[in-house]
Length: 176
Image (cartoon, rainbow, N blue to C red; front, side, top):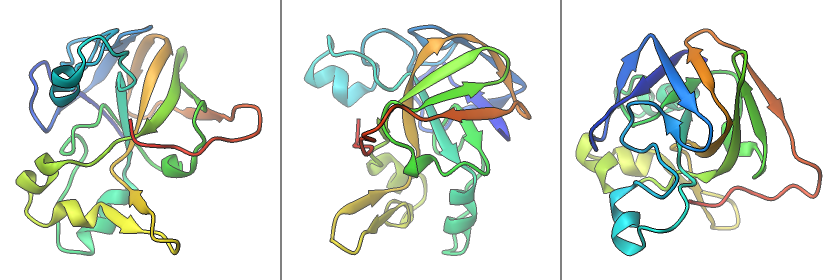
């Protein structure tokens, strides 16, 4: 993992910090998206009682290189992620994968982040750069994955992440 971030307000980007504390069933301490029920403003408006499947947001740093080749400048936490990874194909993980982070944190992958207009407001044209089309015409969302917290603890840049796949059949990630 190359960085960790949080933000107590509902701002698009987060602030890179030295370490974050993650609480079981809630998310990142001091982050606006932590909680048992959904905190994403548009989802709260639709149904504030739905479970929070977006407690911790992870993005792969390789995305930054990909969009840089298209003329964009994106750094860790700019797109609102709590954890920036490197060397893990997050988008290829099946739903239910557990990510063992650092000494004690365990995150269960719930689905894909659905990139929204805030990405376009951050840098015009970036929204289309984090979307793609598969050969069959389906939309590929590249702006990271979401997870819930099974076990908490402290994590910091440099901590290892171990991938624990669920039992087959593997379910593809869908937007959450």
